[in-house]
Image (tube, rainbow, N blue to C red; front, side, top):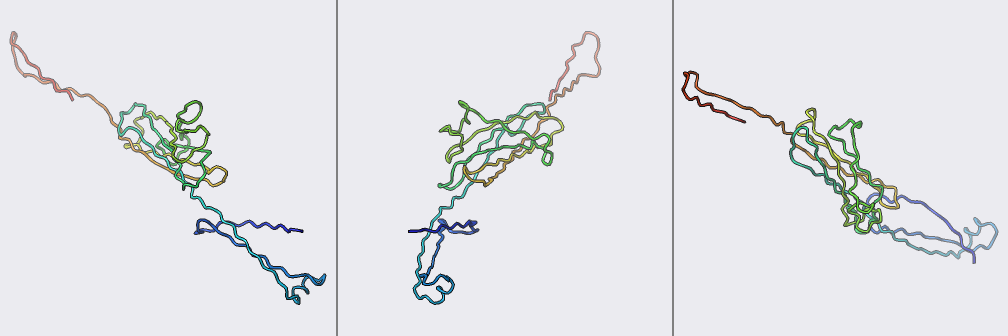
Length: 212
């Protein structure tokens, strides 16, 4: 009537099949003497049993797409839009702990990085269709961020956003990046005026203006 319990922690190996099937086998012999080692050596009655357990292996994933205007003038405030998706396998859990960081066009300098703001509806991301606070497959979560173009910005201005997330209930950190390039325009105005070099009082004078 007794049952012995054992535990073993294993790390799922790289290249494991899906599902991952693990088989355990137990062997035991009848105890005819208190000395178990002697019993195993001399008792011919040995019992064996096996059992297996199958684990579905999901492949989690996250993606981010960044967009904005293709060109803008120095001094303009531009708005970036970000779309985040759960790209895991069909048996993957939803994603939580979404964190977006935009490098603001200055890679290697974290002092001006910014976090894009979620587009909200009733306190939830507008893409959270079931409003459970988790990024499910099929949902597209939306975020926005702004940047004021200056003469010191590189031309084109290329900046990169990074998103990280966790599969709900698991410690894995998923990561994806996307960049976007904007051509900076430097507006200016020029006028050229011309006319005759010689005239006299009473004559009409015609001037020509070329604006560019």
